[in-house]
Image (cartoon, rainbow, N blue to C red; front, side):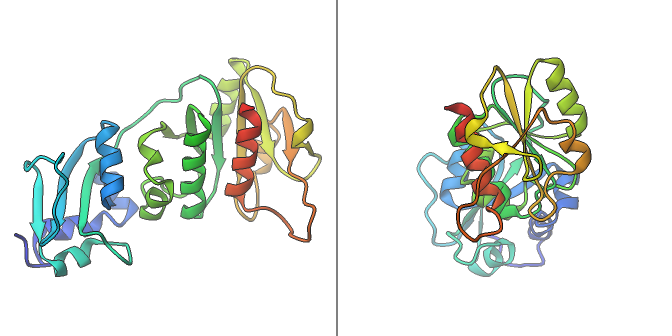
Length: 245
């Protein structure tokens, strides 16, 4: 039982709240029974399970690798408002860009809730991969992981140059769609022809001009009310389901 917040292991767990340390250690912290089970069932390496005193670990968890801590210590490492008393340190996985089926390309989306929701929706829609370009929020950010509801463990997510990825996709006969408003066609009129990749962009600035110019089709979702635009994760969901149907 760890009872001191000055414990070296506790200090290292807290450091995983920061992207710099996560990348250095190739680890990230997840919280809650659901996320831990999703990671376990998906074959990700769970290096340590942290359990608050008085909380009963699920039967499927082995005693190996479980560390018990008191409530004060658990509060020190948690990032949720209502923690469930269980967390885990998970080893990162690295993926290469795979050319298959539908692919989502994300250009500088910065809100973790938006990215997590997009990952969850891409998983639900049956997309084969997500590629995160420069300026996109870290996929292992706690809020991204929670918003994905475990989908980060189901779908390969790659951090890579979007222009290089698009060039490669075009060589593999992909059609590149981009979501934007200027010089765009109604998404309902867009025809699916063969393999398609979808680019979505930053919440305020949209897709960078350099990336936008690489698209074969620019598509938009019409606005019928007075809203200026749709939330990027909502728009992405609509377009992804358009692509697969």
